[in-house]
Amino acid sequence: MLGVKSTSKDRWRQVLDEADRIPDKHLCTLEAGISTKQTEAMRNRRLTLVIPTELHATYTSAQRAEMLNIEIFIELIRKNQVTHD
Image 1 (cartoon, one colour):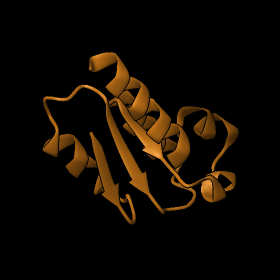
Image 2 (cartoon, helix red, strand yellow):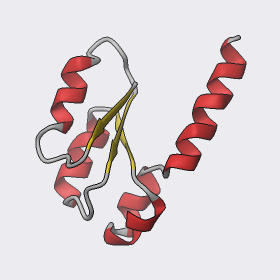
Image 3 (cartoon, helix red, strand yellow):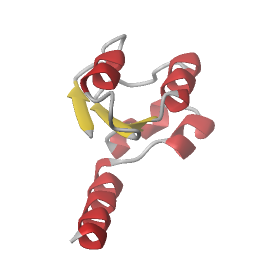
């Protein structure tokens, strides 16, 4: 599941509601520097951020370790497609 929101604010919770039966979710956003508290809450709910590489520098190293860039997300999806075919 990939939700796309230009900003996350509290909208990331919409992704959780929209895909409540899917355990692992992803959120692609263009929002820079989301707070550590918020990204921790996302991680605890099994929501992984997918952020363009250009914005990674606006996050802490701990946050970056938990997020994906768009290219890596696409690779992940391709690998999952191959294993499920």
